[in-house]
Length: 510
Figure 1 (tube, rainbow, N blue to C red):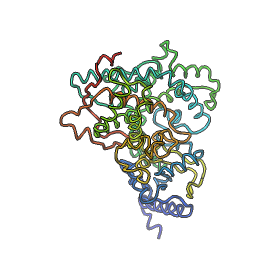
Figure 2 (cartoon, rainbow, N blue to C red):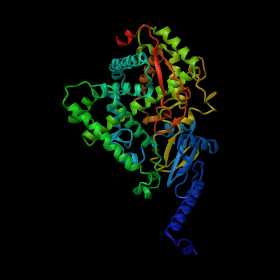
Figure 3 (cartoon, rainbow, N blue to C red):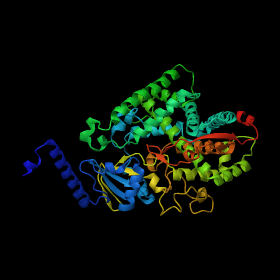
C-alpha cells in the first residue's frame, strides 16, 4: 500500500513533508510550545510571512497571542510580540538567548561571524564589544567626538542652504546618509569618507543592498537539506555583495597604512593588533579580517539606522505642520535664529526629544530584531522553548500595541512630554514598550551615539529650514509606506526643497 503511494520521488518528498508536519504538530501539543499556525508541508509558514514579515507576524499574534511559535521549514521560530513577552525573553531569560543562529548571513555576508553583530556569544564577542565600549561609546569618547558631529552637521546645513538658494530638490535620505558617513569616517578612520557625488551614492546603494539581503527569509536557512540549492539565489547575491564590500574596506585599510593619523578608531585597532594584551577570545590576536568586520558593523549599522530615523522624522513633521511649528518655536526660544543647534542645547529641547522618541516608536529602524537562538531548552511564560529554537522580537508590533498605547497609529509626540503617562519611557532598552535598539546584553552598543546623532540632525534640519514639497509631489512625499529589510526604509524616498529659516546664511559657515 505504502509502496503504491511513493511510486515517484515527488510523492516521496510530499509524504516525508507531511510526516514531518504531523511530527511537528504533535511535538508542539506534547511539549507545550507556544500556539501558532501549523503551516504547509516542508516549508511551514514561510509563505505566510510575505514581503512584510513584521506585519504578518503582528497579525498572527492577534490570533495566537503575544508569544507564538512558527514552523519555518524544519526550524522552530518563536516570536515575541508584546512588551511583556519581550521582557520575558530579553530580561528574565536573556542569558539563554545570547547567540545568533548559523545562516546564510553568517556564512556569506561581509566577514560573517567574524564581526560583532553575528558573532557567537562568548569571550570573543565580549572582547570585540569591550573594544568598542571603551574606545567609541564611553562617555569620554562620545564627548571627545562631539565637535566632529557638530561640524559635519554644520557642513550638511550649509550644503542644504546652497541647494535651497538655487531651488534644488534634495533627497533627505541621501543628504543625511552622507553626513553620518562622514561623521563615522572622521571617528573611525580619521578622515571624511566622501565629499558627495557618485561615490557616496554607490556606497549608500551598497549599504541598502546589504540591509535588504539581511532581511530576506531565506528558505535554505530553515530547510538545511535545501541550502546547497540556493533556491532563492540569496547566497549568490551575498557572495557578490561581500566581494564588493571587501574591496571598499580593503581600500580604507590600504589608504590608512600610508597616513600619519593616530587618534582614530582604526589606529587603535592596529595598535591592538600589534599588542593584543587582554584580548581574550581572539586567539591571542586581532586579524585584518576582524578589523574589517568590526568597521563594517560600525559603518553599516551606524549610517543606515540613523538615516532612516531622521528621514521618517522629517516626513512626519511635514505631514503634521502643527507639530513642526511647535518644535520650531521651542528651537527659536532655546537656540535663537542666529546660530546652529549644538548638542548642549538638546537637554533643553523637551519637545524635540519627544518627537525623536515618537519617531523611534512609530518607525523603529529595526522592525524585527536580529534572530537569537536558544542555547538550552527553557520555559518562558509557561511555554516550552526547545533548544535551538530561534527567537524574533517584533519591535514594530510592540510599539504599536493598542493595549499599551493610546491612538497607537497616530504621530503624537505629546505622549512623551512631562506629565503624560508615557513620559518615563526611554528607548535605551530598559523600557520594553519601545526598544528600537534592542534590549539585554546584545543591545546595540552604539545606542547613545545613535540617539545623539538623530537628535542633533533632526533639530538642525527643523530649526535651520522650512521644507517645501515639490509641486505635484505631495502624495509621494507624504506616502508613509514601508520597504522591508533589516532596517525600515520608506518606499518613497523623501525628496523636498529646503528653504533657510536662519537669520543669515553666514551662520552656517561659522
